Image (cartoon, rainbow, N blue to C red):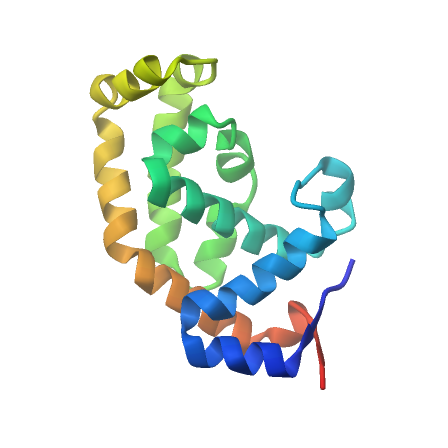
Length: 167
């Protein structure tokens, strides 16, 4: 699998900001996988795509409902049991990598309680019973712009690993 992005689309997104720049790549990946990442599709994807998709998933879930929501929505194994944290460190996001390792510890501690089907009330109550996730959520939200910026810079500096740019 290889994504192709028009240079004009990339230039426009870059002018709009880091979020828009990342979004061009994420949307291209999303189109290739029909919106759902499966094991078969992962086997055909470069590790850079999988890593960017993992960040996108992490970002969307945590900004919407925190690490508890990420885990309840059954994304914990994908985020915490893959080399995502290690790759974030290799991409220069050591602080995010450390946050993910702390998240993994909490995931392992609370996994049995968080992986299930919940009513809205039960789901909301999880936040009260597991306040340890609050610090992770707060740190992610505080650093979110920095994470997005640094990932965008990494992609820009290694663009040939992420897409074929069409003139």
